[in-house]
Image (cartoon, rainbow, N blue to C red):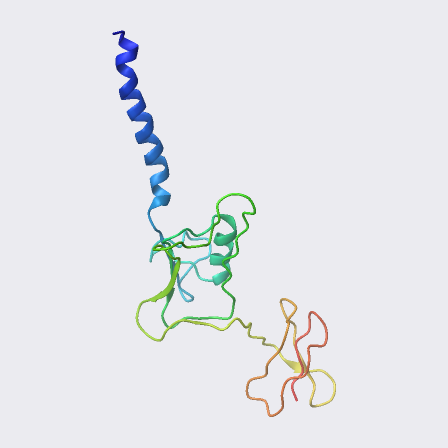
Length: 170
């Protein structure tokens, strides 16, 4: 038997091993951490020393790279986010990301000690100033609100006046 034919099984085995090794990193689940106080959105989110700070970093990762079956997203206890968590799938063709499967869900849970984390989906608006009569107040918003609530007001908040203005509270 020629020398090249004897080397073929070893080469084939080596190629199979290389292919498995290449893909094995995504076969294992990854845990991601989010800490509202000490995180950094430019971090990897993959360890307690490199946590994300905002849910927007989680959302961006979901769109760019995607979460996979078995992955976990852990939110630090005692934290509150005035944002939304949206694991949207941007991959229109190809494998579905941001979706678990039987026996390997994507888990969203908590870590640390203290109260459970809170996601309230609202942005706090500050810098209120009088805008006309004594019952009308106004503030700038970073983005157009879809609704407005007033905490501690005697009357319900009035509708939003314009896309970049806050709501009035009487």
